[in-house]
Amino acid sequence: MLTAQLDQARQLLPEDVFRYYAGGAGEQLSLAEAEDAWRVVRLRPRVLRDVSRLSTATTLLGTPLAAPVVVAPSAAHGLAHPDGEVATAKGTAAAGSLLVLSMRSSRALEDVPAGPWWFQSYVVKDRSLTLDRVHRAAAAGASAIVLTGDVPWLGARHGATRLQLTGPADPGEVQDPSAGLEMIAELGATGLPVVVKGVLRGDDALACLDAGAAGVVVSNHGGRQLDRALPTTRALPEVVAAVAGRAPVLVDGGVRSGLDVLCALALGADAVLLGRPVLWALAAGGADGVEQCLRAITDDLAHVMGLAGAASLAEVGPDLIA
Ligand SMILES: Cc1cc2nc3c(=O)[nH]c(=O)nc-3n(C[C@H](O)[C@H](O)[C@H](O)COP(=O)(O)O)c2cc1C
Image (cartoon, rainbow, N blue to C red; front, side, top):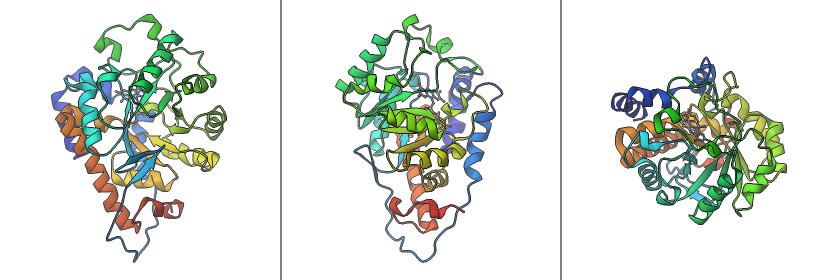
């Protein structure tokens, strides 16, 4: 399913849009390593466990989910489909998942919600724009804020940039490189939990939690920021050990199958985010495509959980790692 949607998207999308979605930064080494890094993990399956009834259900910061798989924030869905994030939100809700809506969305945030959602924020030079946006998101029903911390400025991207594709931004909307840990409390003034995205080190995860974060996302931004940043598969165990159960740890980057999800959970993640696969799904089939993509990965997760001898997520733990 996921590969078919990628092939369809490659055919349907204008070449510059495809390259904007697919590309990474620098020599694209972090991008190139992301998917393979999950394939290095080896598992210790259990035998003769009753897996006749499988459940992938979970709860993330109070939101019940069909599976620990959520939609990563990504900019400008209008480049993939005329309905943009409205279609993404519909498909995500239909699959029982959660959408992390990018601050760089094509559609106004108030128009998007169809189910549970979180709002992703950057810190932009005009702080009042940042704060206005997160308060609007809270008023529109977002249940958490995701503060992306790995973009003091854009990485050296390949191909067209978003701004070349969507037109120039207001100068106040440019990333503010002076943003620090104090932004966690500032965004927390919405009353919503703040999850920091882009964490690759245990010490950073602890600093974020100490500054009030309610969770972290282990991410190298899909290889689009610092090239040679380590694969998230490798960063995850250090972050999980540092966080030590104090808060949820999410991970993204190169997750493409139920097996990848199983490996991430066994390494200690509470959930994964899917970036590019959702964009391909949106381009290939709109809301239905997004629903199919999320259902396919959930079904695949259930299938491999059974093969590993785990009937529920409570039975997916570090003992599964060889
Ligand atoms: C086209 C594109 C746009 C993105 N835009 C954002 C964004 O606006 N905010 C953000 O926090 N991350 C953004 N990301 C990063 C994703 O949230 C996520 O970290 C990454 O795509 C995960 O890797 P994957 O694509 O291999 O699944 C973007 C990624 C892509 C591919």
